[in-house]
Amino acid sequence: MVTTLLAMRISPVRVGAVIGRNVGALRSGPSYWLVLVSGFFEPLLYLLSIGVGVGALVGEVPLDADRMVPYAVFVAPAMLAVSAMSGALSETTFNFFFKMKYMKTFEAVLATPVRPMEIAFGELVWALVRGSLYTGVFLGVMVALGLAAPWWALAAFPVTILVGLAFGAAGMAISTLMRGWQDFDLLSTGQFALFLFSGTFSPVADYPGVLQVVVWATPLYQSVELVRGVVLGDLGWGLLVHAGYLVVMAVAGLVFAARRLERLLLP
Amino acid sequence: MKRFGDFTAVDGIDVSVAPGEAFGFLGPNGAGKSSTMRMIACVSMPTAGELRILGKDPAVHGSEIRARLGVCPQLDNLDPDLSVRENLTTYARYFGLSRQEARRRAEELLEFAQLTEKAASQVEPLSGGMKRRLTIARAMVNDPDLVLLDEPTTGLDPQARHLLWERLFRLKQEGKTLVLTTHYMDEAEQLCDRLVVMDGGRIVAEGSPRALIERYSTAEVVELRFGVLRPADLVGKLEGVGERVDPLPDRILVYTGDGDAAVAEVHRRGLAPSSVLVRRSSLEDVFLHLTGRRLVD
Ligand SMILES: Nc1ncnc2c1ncn2[C@@H]1O[C@H](COP(=O)(O)OP(=O)(O)O)[C@@H](O)[C@H]1O
Ligand SMILES: [Mg+2]
Image (cartoon, rainbow over all chains, first blue to last red; front, side, top):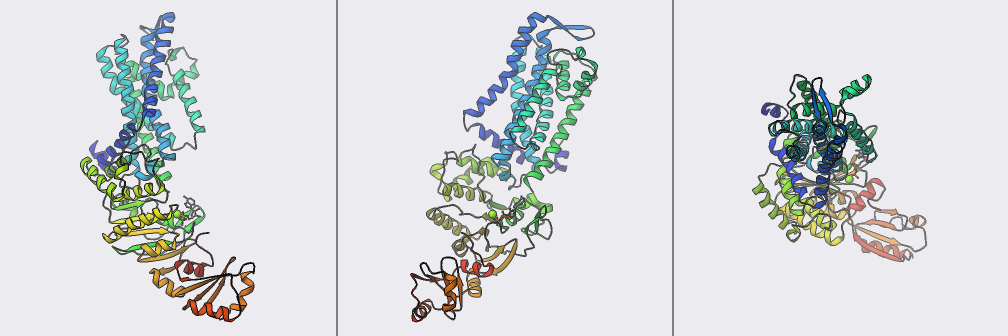
């Protein structure tokens, strides 16, 4: 890790400074906190309304060939993955774009020794801090509601960070391609489609064959499967494939974002 | 040399600035000043040509060079999410200063920028002059070897400008190397030891303000206005008065070594200007002479 950082000439001090700027901004007023808190409640509300509410009607669903679980237990890990996704995405799309395009924050930062890659790194770590705040509390709620065993919940925490990493990096890459706010409608539509059809509310095995393939290729499906496997202690080699998918997504997103930042901000 | 697509913004300029010098790029809007400054600041790569900043190549050592620069961009890009003080401490952290050092430096610079009372305020409510002073203070946070100021006083009222000039003069006295751009003549005359006049991406003249005035203008200029009469029609009658006569749409400029003698000659020829102003020649006149255009409208 240290040697890769050295090879990319990334200074932890400067990455820390980029993160520190966001910590400073937290103190600026209540509006940011409001966004922060509302972002957390959304998946929780879905869990309670659909997982618990609809779950009372649905009863049990098959986890795989030989195991049935209560519907709320099935939905909860998916909502956990969603909360990791949206925590990271809201930071690296909306906020990142605003800082880049309108506040010219990065323009000022790049006049210092800080490099584009260090900005990308710092912003991503910040997104992860926010994402893991969400998922940490969410896991607590799951344990309290009896939807996850404490040890598996603990094991799932780093997995949610990986999910945040992948989505955060991808979100940042997307932000560098955004032309304006109109593109954010597209993004949130895409995000909502992922939210509905990634094996979140019903097993993907119930989908028609072609759709299954499409769904398999999407990142939230990969995340849901991985998180659900770990939360429910349903381990297998397949989980490594999901994890590998997310690692590739994270690295590709980060490298792409840093390149684009360089092009955009250092013309 | 800097091109944006087909458009050449900076078209082959050759300058060198010595340590401790205050150097200016003077030119109208679109001359290529900011493009040049961004290349010097190592945030924009030259399309062609050789560039060395503090002896190093920006393409290779960009980050190291930027560590020793202080940059005040044309448009303030202060952080609206942070307080005045935090703008300084946060910036200091980008340069690798410790938290403690950053705080100490911020207090010094708040003093320098006369913003100590505003330290806890957000940036938004500050006046234009205060924002500008904060931006300059922020540029000093790493105790730079070279300070870049892109139009430091554009858009400020005269009082704010004078306060800023006084601050910049202090930096100059501390021995900082300053490179600044401006389209104000008085600013260039006040602050620059040496300057180049830029127009259309090229350098059209170079020298100290005094030397430029001596070479391209005369000691004094007489401005004559003739009410409703068209200046162009009167040029013939003024021939031989002073060294050169330049008709502008609203007045006539007579370049001369001795303004009062020229005015006397105008009256002797029976001309009755509605107003007469004798003034010292300025860089504005140099620019007008070199390009046939005025700097600011
Ligand atoms: N990023 C850019 N892309 C395209 N053209 C640019 C860009 N930046 C500056 N220019 C053009 O280059 C010319 C010089 O601009 P600039 O360096 O800002 O001049 P100045 O600072 O002297 O007013 C202008 O005509 C401007 O439109
Ligand atoms: Mg400019």
